[in-house]
Length: 106
Image (cartoon, rainbow, N blue to C red; front, side, top):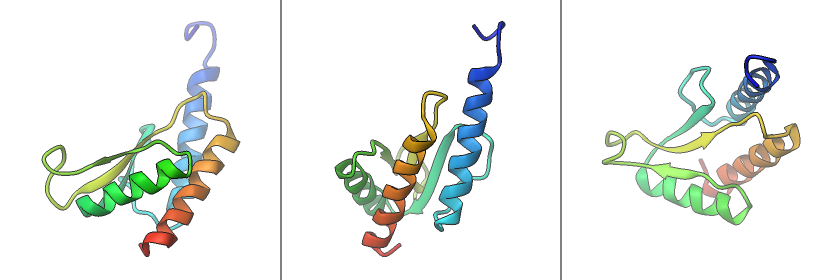
């Protein structure tokens, strides 16, 4: 499939750029990259768990990573973008992140 067309790679690229841009617009810090794994840096282990829990309640499945998986003080939410996500899917997640950010006072 990949040899016949780049449409899936192109869609992944487009989705990744869009998600990264919109997450930054709402004021959440990310590690700059072009990779479809987008870590949202929170710093605090408890905060990463609270955010992951609240996002799951809103229908967005993410994982909070904290020490010893990542260095102390580098806790984060791990998101992974795919070519299967629609723009509506990404907007749904972005909206949930924005609401959760406000609820948690981040």
